[in-house]
Length: 401
Image (tube, rainbow, N blue to C red; front, side, top):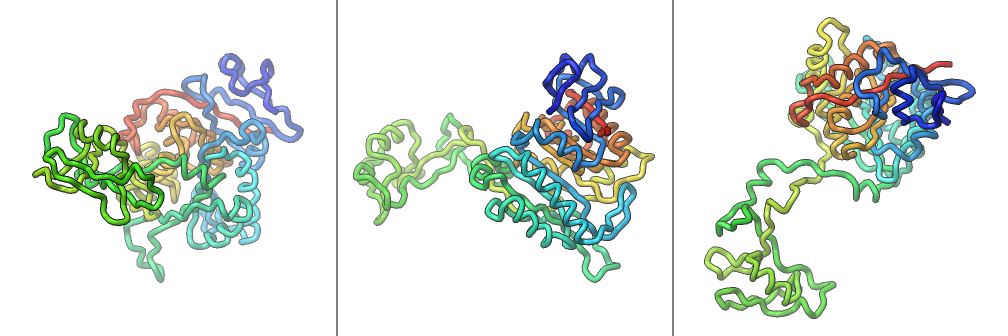
């Protein structure tokens, strides 16, 4: 249970603005707010937490159970490397046990229509998939994203490995399918909309006015008479999409197209102005769409030109696509392997609320500093795409005993 010294609500901003710290009533751990590392507007639920993520998740679990719309994690891949900010060389069983323990905790945070996204590479993906199936439910596995994370050729290896994976799970596959967002349509799709009859409602495209007759009613079988008097009957095994009265009304409203000469098979006009053009996300994500590790490094160097660069930071473009598909403005996003802070930065720019957890000291020296820049209107990454100009704020906490 969370409790401010003078309040029982974590979101009590009147207390947060005047109280330097808050305490969590726990037997083993607490979170302590650090005013010097918090920044911007105080009436926010946005949190950066420095501390061991399993303990932090345990503290947060009651407060945020069932409230998180999207969880993205970029855990250690266990590829037996030593990086600038962490070692990634556990034995397989220890690594899998560590990840599994955190997935079990994360499952409790998921809202009914939420999803959990996990970055991983070839070395452990198959073991992780089996473990995640057991914890999250094999029936809730959504897909595996293949991300082109580099475009240069690595000639020192047997194969040049240019991709990584993102495993996607849902709390409920059906609920997620209903809630998830499509991707914006590209220019080619919009080109399908034209205006050959100079309709004042703008560009449109035509779609079939007949459908399969398997579940039709008797009212859907009749003869359509075009404005020029030509009769049209539905093809064999088909029926009209509307009953006769509705079809006549649509014709009167100039929403049925009979071709340029008026003799064509009737088709329905669908106007671009009435549609939000989206396409179903695909599972192959190219660097030209979501960027690469290398572009993320360049962005990081622009922010911190004199700091040690993260070896494999995730680009803002990748996280932007994930959050666009999996969440809406004001939804809550969680990342318990925050790393260089990309998830928090993108969530902030996209108007999502967020909780980011990172154990290393760079939670304060890099993540918090990066988020200060974001609040002040930092213009790199996806800022131009989302028209980010600055604003908001976050609270910084440390895990204490």
